[in-house]
Length: 476
Image: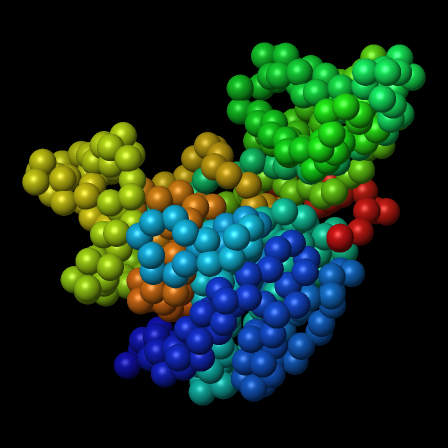
């Protein structure tokens, strides 16, 4: 038996502990940096598996770096375990129903992501023990990927500087090696402070913070015409000034996400949004406080490592789905609207131009897609991730595992409901095997590591990574 098949068997032999951890994290969904319970299964397993653990890195109480081995190369594996607010959902149910009204939920599959990364780290560690391989494996526990960007704070503090290569993965509704970029993001709070007054008896004495926030939003709507096509600006009201319409609202707060393909483009839009906020404050004679929350860089896929990871995905990324798995997932496919279903057939046709109409129909209507997409690289962007900051520090690669119901989007109730299923569990194990076998390639092939590092140097143009997060901003 070759080494990679050994790794697969080693992970399967311990699969119950990874599945149990994933389900435990699903049951304690926590957001941003407050991942008190979610981090515990990692620490328990890593300690038992013989990793040395450093806790609380980069001023984040629930982050960690777990290390096994010594010497070069140093391979990093990235684990996430934060959830999303207001996405509570009853497990395995084919309709939207909160388990706890207003509660959190794992709508992006990070309960799987983190434990799949853990499985990969333990799997390659076990082979290193058996084969007495030199090199170092580091598993990074990274809170707040959804909002707050723990990895960006870690990168700012030099936590990843020791790495030769970093590996990651993400649940998705299709399997592929990630050859795309991602959007850089700035996250900012705009807090307005006015003067309260009786809205009917003495409105002239009031200064409305809510008016300021609304004027700011209107200004940003006009700005959209004058930013690059790929730019994205979103906002949420954190404080609308109170519930009484008979009071001139003295406070209001907005939370903005500003995105663009490059971090410098996001910064340019951010500066213009700031001017609009300042103008809104001037118009309403209110005070403005701009609070920088966080930022993350655009992702740079390393083609050398991504190609190696894709080859392992082909061999170990098959989840071996059963008819029961497909029947289980049918409930989520049935929840999609007709336009989305038609889009899935169109996607299958585009991905399989030589396939018969019968095969295209089969692929486009499968509740869980059993196909791995061809490898390709493009400058196109999709979503945002703080893995982007890691990719500026060292060569980075990641795969997607199609363990989510086809056609359902991230941050949806369907993903939360699916999070404890057999399909989800098979996905995290496939991810672990793909990560572990790629780590093995890197440990045993110095030419691959050298090629990856040369490519990374050329991609960043020799520039040293510089965080967009100001030095005085701390995780919160």
